[in-house]
Amino acid sequence: MKDCNNLNEVRIEIDILDDEIVTLIAKRNAYIHQAVKFKQSVEEVKAQERVDQVIQQVRKKAISLEMSANMIEELYRRLIDSMVESEIAEFRDKGAF
Image (cartoon, rainbow, N blue to C red; front, side, top):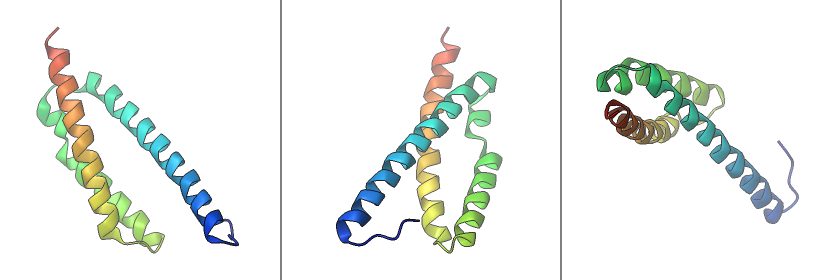
């Protein structure tokens, strides 16, 4: 992590990180869309067991980085819920062919 000398430098570094975060979320989303072709039902799309596993992993990671595990869980639950909704819509469209 860069040691910033003023508030403007801090903001520049945060903007750079935000750009990287959005890029990583877009990559994650692309994999979610790939997963649709391997699933056979809406329940399989929802994959509650997998969601629970991901939440456990990100909570552990947050704790190891001395962050709020609750905040990370909340962010991931929103992210996952949104991606699952999109995946369900795509799954249903796939069945329309």
